[in-house]
Image (cartoon, rainbow, N blue to C red; front, side, top):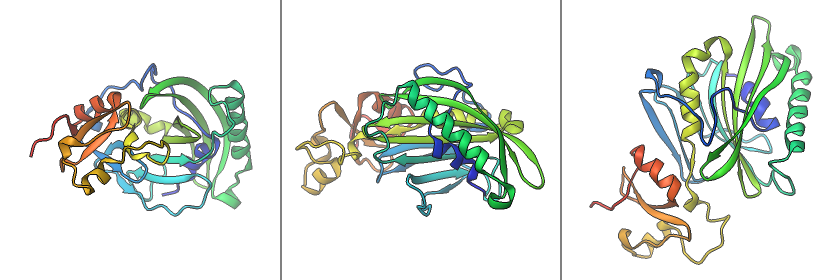
Length: 272
């Protein structure tokens, strides 16, 4: 799997569009997304859905200034589509995420990246980069950016137009990028997969204890202190739910709780 397609827009920042984005990513669940799995990352505190037949990799060597947390691809030798979750720590310090200048800088960086590639140096070249759409969406209670970009990939065998959806979520001084990409000629086969995966991304705020200084410890620590699951205290603005698979407690925002319960990841009451 050549992951350079994802890297282009991870480097430059945010993207996603084309769908009728409003407060969330709009999508209908079709048969191609009938069998899904829920990926949970306790270290970084998020969940995301992905196709059960796709290959998961969350042991990616870290070579860049952003953190490549997990990737989902249909085949290790197929670069034509994939879903990637990344985090840029401290990237939004002293930056206005909602400004036109921020978007202009992203667009310029993407164009510079595209023009810098060559078949001899990188194995492929990039031409005809374009930012074609931009919208906002509310993801995990955060006003986020959704852009759509296209570019043409050229290697020694084939020329392919690539569509990349990149969901950008501000998180204090940090920024999340959830990348969903596909060759345009197979987009009809994967459109619902990409849209539903983006829309499923949920931050588990109780795990981001390093970002919020409060006296209340995490549910895990409270359990270690012999506090009963039903007596767990949550930080302000968070509610208590229980993971469906093992009944472990979690504190999440009320907006996230409903989504997690609906998807079967969590239950509202502790049932021994």
